[in-house]
Amino acid sequence: MNIKAYFTGKSGFVFWLNIVLMGVVLVGAPLGAFYALNQFTHHGEKIEVPNVVGSSAYNATELLEEAGLRVEIADSMYNTRMAPGAVIEQTPRGGSLVKNGRIIYLTINLKGEPMVKFPDLVHNSSLREAEAQLKVLGFSLTPCERVDGQPRDFVVGVKQGTRYLHTGEMVSRDRALTILAGAGEIDSLELDTLVGAEPESAADFDLDF
Image: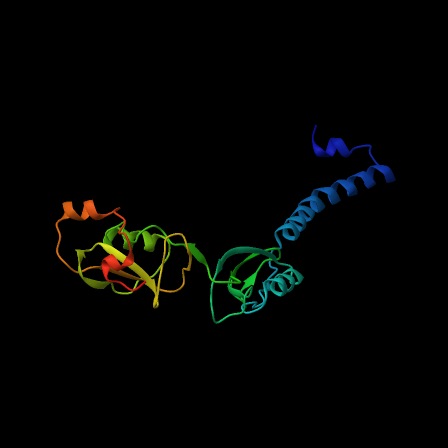
């Protein structure tokens, strides 16, 4: 059946109303879908990210959420120059243009120094082993101090500043450590024998603990 034959003999208000409604549906449905898609994806909508670095985590979260953004605490650090609980970094940065609902990742300043339990190194490890363990724990190290009269590279003490450290105590990870190791000469077999042998007292190594 061709189009002319279909329309032959058809007339009346209802018929033409159906034709008009069909045209509206054919044109309106794609336009409506396109509009809904734009609304869903926030096409063309941009929000300027507030700069919250230095603000408290609570105030930063409140400000970002009021702007239509979401917040996630991504990491924490310790910075002595900023207040405890303050925002150290944010991603994306303040001033960036993003879509509504974008997640802003924050790095928060710890409320105290990150503390680490000091491992069993003194009189129980070589210099190389001690350096490796302390670096894995996140400590920075100053140049090793050599102790005369002791087997070379045998760890006889570790200090932070002027304070000597003891196994198991909680130590600030943000302050450098200094390893004290023997300055003498010794072969590897003898060093292996010494590692793990506990001296009777610190005086055995002529160190003032």
